[in-house]
Amino acid sequence: MARRLTILGSTGSIGKSALRVVRDCPGEFEIVGLGANSNVDELARQIDEFKPARAALADAAAAARLQQQVPGTEIDCGPDSIADLAAVDVDLVLCGLVGAVGLPSILRALESGNRIALANKEPMVMAGRLIMSEARERGVRVLPVDSEHNAVFQLLEGRDLADLRRVYLTASGGPFYGRPRESLRDVKPEEAMKHPRWDMGAKISVDSATLMNKGLEIIEAMWLFDLPLETIEAIIHPQSLVHGLVEFKDGHILAHLGVTDMTLPIQFALTWPKRVESSMARLDLAAMGELSFAAPDFSEFPCLGHAMQAARQGGTAGAVLNAANEVAVAAFRQGRIPYLAIAEVVGEVLESSSYCEEYSLESILEVDAETRRLAEGVVQASGVTSL
Ligand SMILES: NC(=O)c1ccc[n+]([C@@H]2O[C@H](COP(=O)([O-])OP(=O)(O)OC[C@H]3O[C@@H](n4cnc5c(N)ncnc54)[C@H](OP(=O)(O)O)[C@@H]3O)[C@@H](O)[C@H]2O)c1
Image (cartoon, rainbow, N blue to C red; front, side, top):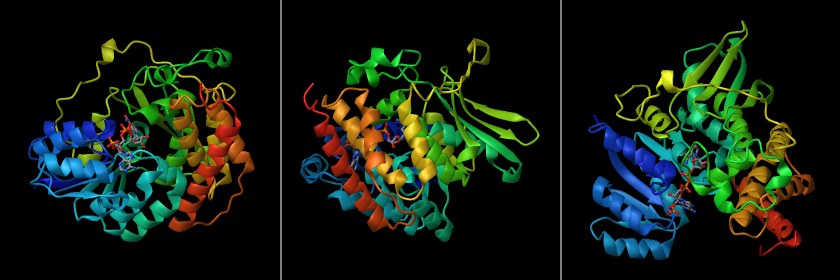
């Protein structure tokens, strides 16, 4: 029986890779729903090829244009339409949305009993406790798509967590690894988005350059695997061939290797617990060359330190960290602040925010909105509003 699948963020980097997996595994999947923000042409192509029963665009004007292109498929629209799509009964919802916007959809999918393949890490950073308690209550699995978490998931499957000493999440170091910080004053968004190993969406590419991405992933791993912060470490591995490692109390370290292609972890999450033949590129061990590892230098990557601070703080600090970072990265991409100001904006917002331990969906969305206002104020006060 084909698995019924909905893809949120189908027009993005993760969404398109997921559809490559579907194409590559004939008979394994039936696409029930596709959703995105405003990319009319890409979604029209996908509807034509995969014939979903339902589709949605958050942007109403774009949805109206799409409806004209695909009169045979009903197009829902508005921000709630994506969460409504997540709630349609399927075997699996892949969440490839970017940013905090994915949180309501993830919760709606879980409430409806839909298993989730999760790429969209920001909601986990904001509200990991809420997501994982909902998943536990409903008895629904959250399968990690992020390559590092997917690696750790595979390494830990069937193991006794009491034997675990440490989890390592690898980081390439991004396009500026090894360059002194003062040489990064004038880097352009295009340079920051040019990741040396992975081809990804714009926001995660900037997060990879600042290493905020690894900080977000450490918090994501705490929630996904129910681990204390002290057991999770980031390690720089410029070749990006080892994605995750786990160390056990007897000193053994197991590593997961794979090509730098997101179709690999996506396919694993979509077919789990089965493994399905793949025609994607294979890792050539003999051609791999050197594999190197180094501890991250927190003075070179202050965003990683900010994320660790938020992880230690807990409660609503993850939502503050995430919202401040989303605003700062958007401002950098718009040319409103320089690259190095991303970390400064996030640091200043973290310092001037107050936190509480407990939260609900409503209160975390309020924290998100309030932090965005605060961060926007810091961006504007930085005085570099048009570079
Ligand atoms: N890319 C990777 O290799 C990779 C690897 C690991 C984890 N991740 C994580 O996966 C998530 C997606 O990353 P990505 O690189 O695929 O991002 P992306 O290429 O920017 O794609 C984002 C997707 O989300 C949709 N979207 C954006 N805002 C929306 C809104 N308000 N309402 C509805 N849909 C919205 C976009 O639709 P439009 O196209 O219509 O704008 C697009 O389909 C991120 O959380 C990222 O950290 C990505």
